[in-house]
Length: 289
Image (cartoon, rainbow, N blue to C red; front, side, top):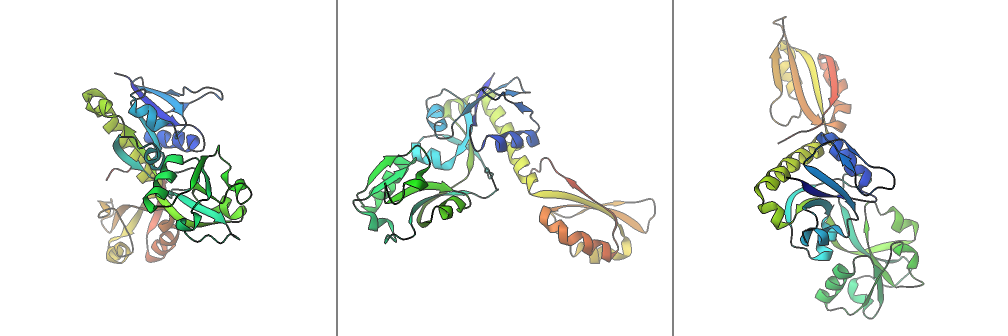
């Protein structure tokens, strides 16, 4: 059994490779190659543009892949979603597909663009959006760089944005959000119905989700005087209850928790002041809930 796996080429490529590394896979690719090498003989990865991946999946040319919910919706592809993976090229926040116009334009909502021209990579998604609102517009395909076309060439654009910085830099403002999108691990239905491929897909889903969970968390362990236990436990968040282990000195215990990485910045000084010693923070590779 070999699973043909689509890996997003472009802005998500490096972040995806890093995610697989945290999940326990080594992925390498030559600068001009579209076929990465992975240390798993049951996986055959291929680099594909996220925009194209849903169509190749639906046609059965690849078994599974990582692509954006926005591109799945644009294609209207019928796929099996294995899991949602909340990561992107800059942050762990979802992206938004938005309708944007020039700051100086009079347009305040989609209905104001009746009879106007919209540039976008999301031609089908944008066309459906305006049709559902009963607004007639001309929707034209753009090979990227939509921001520079407003207002000289088109009145509005539909683009994806993670931080909004590119829109602001081009003096554009968002007037509506079409959808919010995250990366999805998806498969075609034939691959999902194959028992061997399905087990591999489920295993990958668990490992990738575990790596995503771990990217936001750290482990923290310390030695705590028994007399200070209630005070210290009161300030410690954890996935469940902290792990408590006895030490050779019966007046002390070892305590271990998992918490948000940012939380540790405030907690470590507070724990030290409360009497905890030997405090160690360590990164996590995978956390499975």
